[in-house]
Amino acid sequence: MLIRYLILLGLCLSSIDAFAKQVYDQHFYNTHSVQALEVPENSLSFLILGDWGRNGHYQQKPVARMMDIAMQQLDGEFIATTGDNFYSNGIASVDDPYWQTSFEQIYDGPNLFEDWYPTLGNHDYRGNWQAQIDYSKRSRRWEFPAPYYAKTFAVGDNSHMLVLFIDTNPLNPEYKTRAKYAETQKQDGEKQLHWIKQKLANSTAKWNIVIGHHPLYSSGKRYGKTAGIQRVLEPIFEQFQVDAYFAGHEHDLQHNRPEGKQVEHFVSGAGSELRPVQQREFTQYAISQAGFLTVSVGDDTMLVQFVSAAGERLYHYSIGKE
Image (cartoon, rainbow, N blue to C red):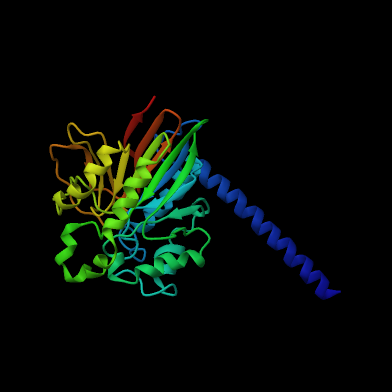
């Protein structure tokens, strides 16, 4: 009898704890929000995060917390990464402790348990990059089928969006002679370029965007020079009229629009450590502040919003299409 009573008491206490947590969660999201964040109706929304995996150091935790809040506000569908998922030398295996201390235990907000679509950065190639793909078999939310891949999403009432998640590392001429990135040159860059062209040429989607690691234009003060990768990819993106290219690598947030070009260029690399920015002739907006991008796509509009770790909408830009 006593044992039965204790079991019932335990169940009651567990129910009370669950109810209390639900009330707390509801109160938290009612009192925490991204200031001025626009929530477009009838749009698919997602986040773009870059250069983030630092074992919880720098601004990684505040950014993760605000990502959870933004996903709740937007009813976000997924999170994409622009690479450098694990610093400084990638990961060793699917059992590397970094999976817990840099990913699972950091991005643990309830709204972050949606699909994650990663890309590879140069630091990921300094470790076991294949293990990041293999982790897809361990984690329901980590969706990483290959070094480059494509996804199509329904948006608005009658439209679709094609997203190409590419691997810019083997395409970057800068890495052909750098010993620490020799692993990147074992990939077949020409095969990937053919794949990119084929996907864009055959696309029937209204919206076509590309996500990779290296920017084609940069307002970052440390790097800035992007001519090599720009020569490789820009002619393709312009030929097929890609709507937007999202990159990382630079540890900041940027919107770059070169004169006379079709493609809008965004950088989301402020997921943890920061570096200074510099105004250039193509710079529309650049800030050295921790944060991420939100993207909301409907039938006629793509809205890109820059969100800081402090919960402020820093900048926004809308792309219209008839």
